[in-house]
Length: 462
Image 1: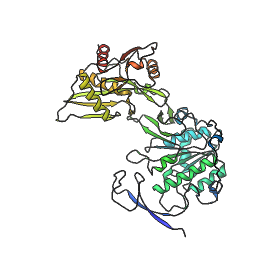
Image 2: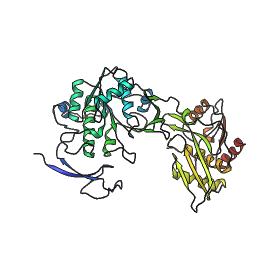
Image 3: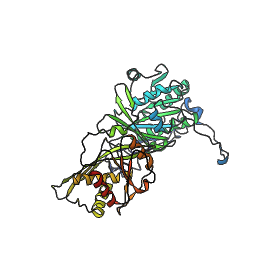
Image 4: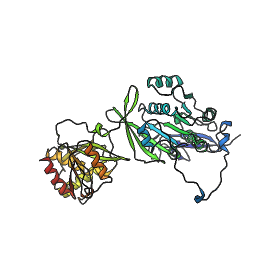
C-alpha cells in the first residue's frame, strides 16, 4: 500500500503550508487553507495510471546538442475564428495547451463550441464536458448553428485516465476540456477542484499533448479576485492563458492574452454576444467612439496599443469642488497612482492647482489602460473639465508625461495616427518625437512639454 502524506493548501492561491493556519500568508485570505491527503506516487507528468497513458508515460528521451536540433517554423491551423487566431498569435499550434478563463456566463463554452465546429471539418475533434450533460451541449450547438456538428465527438467525463483513453480511441487531434476544475486523476485522493487535483490533471494533459501532438483548449474558472482558480502551477504548466470578460455595459466580450508562448502576450480582441453566438468585432475603435454630436468638457480621445494594433478610446474626466477636507481621486480603467502623478505634474509645471477639487477619471467602455501613452490625454481631459472648455471631437491626444513636465514619445506612433485618420480625426496633439513623419489627412500638433501641450489645448479649444 502506498504511503500517504498530508498537504495544507490555500484554495484561493494554491500556496502550500506545513500545517494548518487560519490565514494564508500569500494572499491574506482567511479560512481558505484545506488539508489534503496525497499518496506518495509518481507525478501525473510521468504516470497517470491505467493502460490509456502507457504509450507516453514511459516515453524515452535523448540528450542532443542544441546546434543539432532541427529548427523549423511551428505549423499552425485556424480556430475558425479570425479574431481568435490573431490573439493566439496566428492560429493554433499543434500540441499546445491553452487555458481560457473568465467569469460565469462570459461565453467561454460558447466560443470554444463555435471554434471546435470549424476545426472539426479538417481534424478529429473531441469535446469533453465535466459540467454539462451531452444533451445540453447538443442543444447549444444546434441553437448556435454550429458547423460540422455531425463530426464533433462529445463525451461527459471527469476522469483524466478515461479521457486519454477516449482521445487515443477516437484519434482526436483537437480536444476541449470543460473544465479543468472538474477533472480528477485516480492516484490523487483529493476532491475535484482542489489545488492538487487541478495541478495533477493539467500536468497529465500537458504531458500527453507534448508527446502525442494533441491540442488541448481548457476552460478554467476564476475566483472572487478575478484570478485563475487553483494553484499558480496551472498557469506555469499551460502554453497560453486567455481571459474572457465583459465590458461595463455587458454588450461586448473582451478576450485578452496574459501568457502566450507562441505569440504576443498583450493581444486582445472583441466579440458581441448574440442569440446565435459570439460575433467578431472587426473594428473595436468604432465601439468605444460612439459619442454624441455635442462636445463635452472633460472628454478626450486617445489611442492605445493593444498587442499588434491600435485601439481608439475615449477618456472622460470630471473636476468638481470638493465638499470634504480630503478631496476624492477616483479612476476607473486608469492606474490611480498615475492619476495622482498627473495631478501633481499639472500643479507643478502647469500652474493649475486642484488641491480642493474632487477628480474622477473614466475610460469609456470598460477598457483597462495598461500603458503610459494615455497620460497626456488624461491630463488634458482633467484640464478641459477644470476650464469647462470642450475639446473638438476631431482631435486625438497621446503621449507619456514625465515628472519634469516633458512629453515623451509612444511606440508605434505612425500606426496610431493612421488609425485615427481612418476614424475621421483631422488633428492630433502628440509628442514631438512622434511627429517626424507627416501623414495626409491629419494635422500634427507636436509638443515637447506640458506648457506647449496646454497652449495647444487653448488653440484647438478656441
